[in-house]
Length: 242
Ligand SMILES: [Zn+2]
Image 1: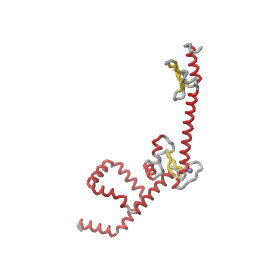
Image 2: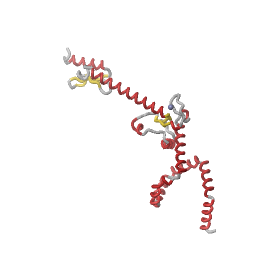
Image 3: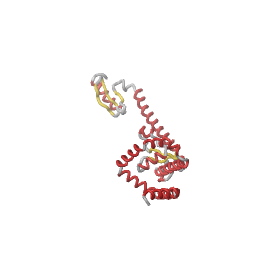
Image 4: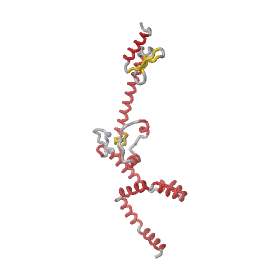
């Protein structure tokens, strides 16, 4: 057989047994998924530059086809493929939420809560530190779970049911409000006290007390009593208090 004949023969064989060949390949992939993915990941890490160059060259060569395809990619997908992708997303979510769940199980981490329903569970940032995290609220979506899995499941997350997510947020807001009101109360008390501000002692934003008399600075004190004592001493010395 000439090489062309061999190629034609192989192609014909493939077309004839296409379903069988694909089935075998799919089964092999399913059975060895972890190994294959680990190999691919290691290969990609070792040959990053080479891959990028090849990819760019391939893109330039097939630019028109690629762009045309990307426009119709979603609508071209069969319902079976879309269904399969939805299933993968569900699996990713299940795996991630189980990892961050109570005792590594698919369960809400709140004490004594026994919600295990995947549809009712969400991923939670344990520490609500800063607006950045609050803006990027993790909805427990599959993409968040996949991202965390790829990052080796870093610490700082937990699985909560939607109700306890709500409760946690309510408690956070309540605490924030209490702290704000406590701080405001101190300021208001200070403003009401006639001896303050008007008479040479000023409360700072750090809740310490500064003594300033006729433009001169006489120190900052932790307690109002100390500040008042210094103030009185200075005023007496200056003859401003008899
Ligand atoms: Zn719960």
